[in-house]
Length: 181
Image (cartoon, rainbow, N blue to C red; front, side, top):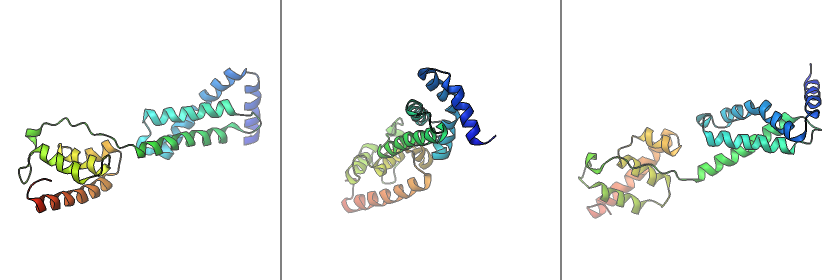
């Protein structure tokens, strides 16, 4: 059986349903396409509820807008991927926050600066909302590079590079003034 024959048979089955039931049936039939798209577009987020929800919204939009003349799967795939890509772009623009759960007394600093002075120095030398700032503050709070990178949704190597650069700027600032900024 060819693809056209399969799609024709599916159209005939769906033609028997009213519009609301047809939309629900299409969503039920093509729901696995959402999970497949999530695995293909962002394998590290394949279980992310928000990403999957955006994919389901795309599937719903495809089912609502389907003209019944052309095959449904290509339309569904495009709508699902468009919604997921929009979510991923928005997620990239967000600067996630890292919960600061660790206590100040557990931190040990090379030059014996207090955690408040170090955090203040980081905030002065980095741009507000930057990932470098979030990483430096997270590491200052006791998170490992891997934990901080995971919480901020970036690769570990990128986080390590940003931390090296931020740490160098912080050391230069402390060396110039003799104390944190």
